[in-house]
Image (cartoon, rainbow, N blue to C red; front, side, top):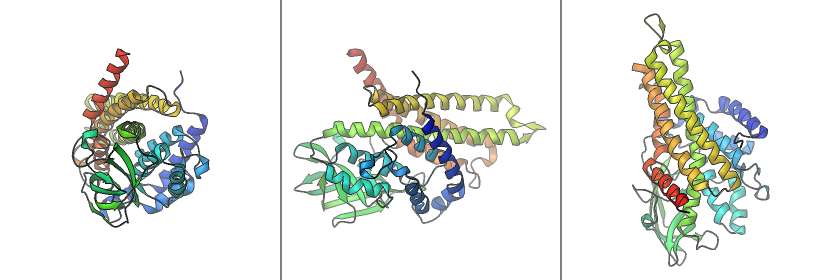
Length: 370
């Protein structure tokens, strides 16, 4: 079985690498990290003009209709350059929730705006520290009004719309909340990676609309997390690859005792370990992309496996990149810390590595018991 990407997706990758090489340099990332702007609006609009925001959205909603394979490619390339844009929160989470559970009217209202870059959205799941589990959903929806708090919400400071996990008399439901409506307040939540915005959203009897017909329950939330886990895994693989490339380039140009440090066995072993971990993560991510594209029964296991291996690979790559750079690796002027920050942040988004390892075990137990 061939899990490689199609020729069209490979062309998309080449296009993305050229575009991002020009439009998303480390200077752009640092401008967001060090400045007041929560994201790069110019890059976001350029991505919309390229059609990237609607890569997996059907053309009847003004999307490109390229499918999840293309979306995985874009996620990897955006992860490679640490693009400071609300791509995961808007495209990989909120848009996917609307596609999966929204009514036709809701899809036609919101998805074209996302495609055009006019609407930034977030998926508000967490209510403080903890894993994404059903008992953790405490926000309440009563008579079209929502009360509760969600934090940290990715890109919550800049989003205009939130897909919120909440409860009504039937159980867990997804609700759409206009973040400019009365009863909504938000405050910034400092994170290890300031180039990725997060906020606390407080709802005090704020107006909300059930997504679709409701009644989807926690199973829908888990399916959305599985999809986002695969897409996030590609972003992590991209970051791990860039970290490895950065460390390898430095090991070739930095001399010590009259020879490149890459010639020393200790450095070779570090880079070899990172390479093996990254390629393992890439393999698992590719399998996840296949499962996502064909809606395979193995999707939950593929998502959890991809998530675990990608989190481990990106953290290892970012950590060893700093080590290979030696005394300058941890300094502000070098870009190593940018990848380390993002590796730590992505490893905790959508649930911790421990949560996803538990998912791997539970999915294997379910399969073996069948």
